Image 1: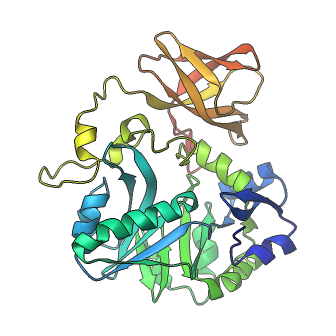
Image 2: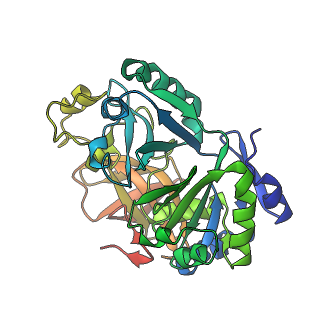
Length: 355
């Protein structure tokens, strides 16, 4: 099983370790609810070094990304910024969702660990046409520092470049081989820092001493669920297209001359008939879980992700349902039909409820 450079640090903190996509990762250090509230109210640190990091060199990198990426890389090609979007196959199926960072004339990409081998092969296959060199950065680790106090905490570290404080949402900057980005997976403000593996333990220890709370995968999941952020493998797979996965906003067809992989398939989809991902709140006693069947007045659906929400103090979930739903529906839990409300999939942003 794979281990991150911080594995021993997690064990020393008494973390409960689990298998996550063949990586031994901490699911919690104390309690999920305590860790969740630490991020919503102060600052938490996450080891996300299981994620895949790729750099690119030589060739026509912009043309390369314009072909393989459904969002338009030209949006960030002249600025220090990150962009979120999807890799699609020819049928419009989602191979993965990822973030591409651009700063100092360099591109860096972070994608999911479960798709690492698939993505590497996909990049290398299409890079040949553009003379691009794909560099898998297994020598890098990633820390996420998230929460309303996250930026203040990291700026207390003496060797952190003060320009980090000037980064706007999705802004990024390189400092040598280190990358700082105003991104995250929690719905809170914060930074994600990609650093060489030999430096990550020192940064982790500094942040712990400054009062940041270590956060496991359990709270990471409840935080991203409250923020309405998809988890690849749960809320979308290769069998789903972006329009039924709340990713339509990442599809950029403004340049009619840009031909990206999956474009023709997307153009053939009738979006008025596509299922949609919605937020659901359970109105009765119980907990929503993946796979539970949903019905509403004009169709049906299925729960994709579900959990107890520590912030909302209720059971919430993401579900893919037929269009035509109104305010209420039903869910089957253990042979009981219970009531749900349909809401925006974005339950919270920076600790505030979304209407």
